[in-house]
Image 1: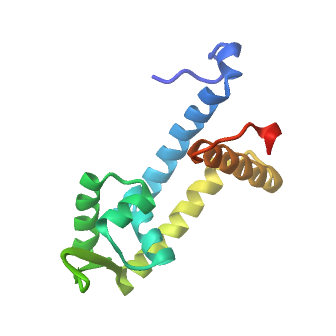
Image 2: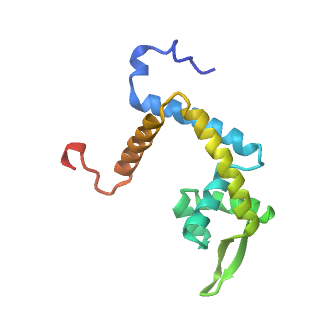
Length: 158
């Protein structure tokens, strides 16, 4: 059972990492529930977006683009192939690997998932004004980019 915000000690409610973790749990639940209504998972959405934005790719490249472990990627691609959302074809330059491409069915499926993701985002961010939502997205982007940078710099050095 999760503690309610009111029952959590004030000192714990003031720790940003704890607040981020709690918000992430809520966000994950909202997104997962919405996608499940369409028989989809977060990883399906990530792969379809990656293929839409950057085009056909190998399984290894999709793993790098999405952060999905290679061992998990096989199952995700199997599910998407079974739903006819993607097509696997031998790479013409290296027959040992496959190239994954998005199908018209996959594009339509992604459109439905986009709507569900947007609905989940609206629910998650409902207590915030549009300006606050933009600021939150900006701040989370700064944090994420900083901690994924090979040479992170303190804010005052930027």
